[in-house]
Image (tube, rainbow, N blue to C red; front, top):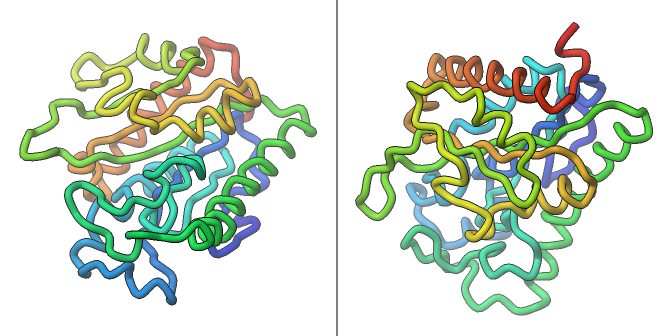
Length: 255
């Protein structure tokens, strides 16, 4: 079942009762009319700088596996990156992965404020509301965000296959890593970590609410097809199921 939807977000499985909330901030590369494509080529708008390819499909698979609600971003992170706080320059990047973003160059404070109001504020409020509704209903809740990363960065192949990222609260990440498949290159806080400013959602909606939380980064070449997405979803579901049990977060997914 779908739930509330605004231009900046969509909530799926709104009435689900499983013990997690799934978040995919970079689900879409959509740039609304009025931004003139931010002055980018079609290739750039389709590339990883604009979204996280494959991440939404895995996030949806996890939401189904855990009977969990899910919120997805519906506007490109180049318009506003909902995993960054308003004060962060990278929230509206003028350059990303070596590509200039003309529509983001030299923005006035008014223009930045408008994007915060149009994209970040409704997304963040919708996630707040979703978590608060579960708190009022006394439902167990852990926060899981899903992302993808490029297999090559600045010409260097990345050996990491799946990153398990955390900020100050390591409970869920520790439990996942304890049960990680040794065949996979599953690494803590890689290819990014909190020092790179990528844990805003975990801090704002997990740490601040004392919820166990984790950010999952998947190398995009591992989730390029439906079959690959299904395989990674199965692997992550197994890891998460065991990890949630280890930290005592259980619910309808165990029925």
